[in-house]
Image (cartoon, rainbow, N blue to C red; front, side, top):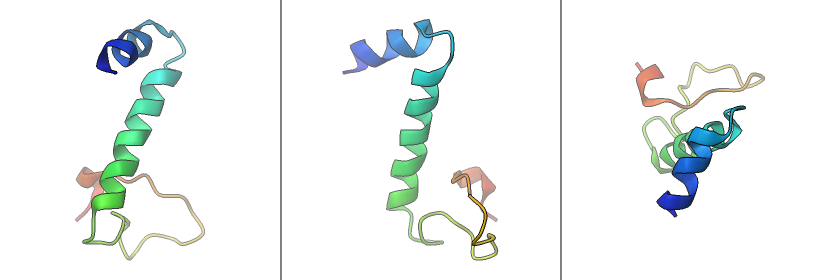
Length: 58
């Protein structure tokens, strides 16, 4: 699988393949995180989106 994804992530000039891989990685991390649930801080606005990233947690 890595042999297929890596060249595509590098060769596609729009960055769409690389962005998709990064989003999938963040979603997987978020799904496994329990503190805070789903990696979303309790202070996050419920009407706004949230980018899940371990570095954004307090």
